[in-house]
Image (cartoon, rainbow, N blue to C red; front, side, top):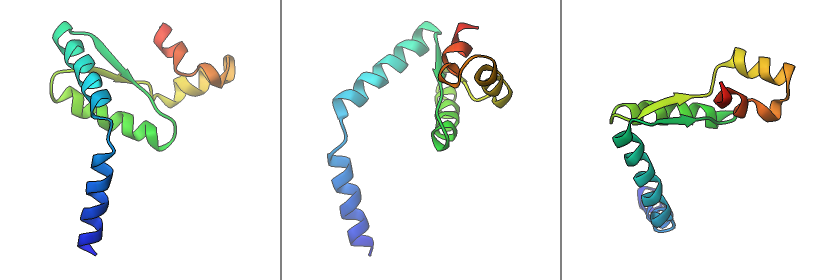
Length: 92
C-alpha cells in the first residue's frame, strides 16, 4: 500500500509545471519586496484553500487579503450579479 502511494506521489510530482510554479513564486516575491497586496479568492472548497494560502503567505511577509466575506458576496450577488462578487470587491 505504501509503495503504491509513494509511486503515485512521485508520478504526480513529475507532472508539475515547475516553470509556471517558479513564475508564480517570482510574482509573489516581487509583491512582498514592493509591499503590494495579493488578493485571493475561490469558490466552494477553493475558498478555504485561498484562506489557507493567505495564512501561509502572510507568515513569510506577503500582504494578503481573501475575498471571502459572505455578507459582502451575497450583497453584491443580490444587488448586482453573482458574476461580479469578486471584481466588485476589488473595485472598493
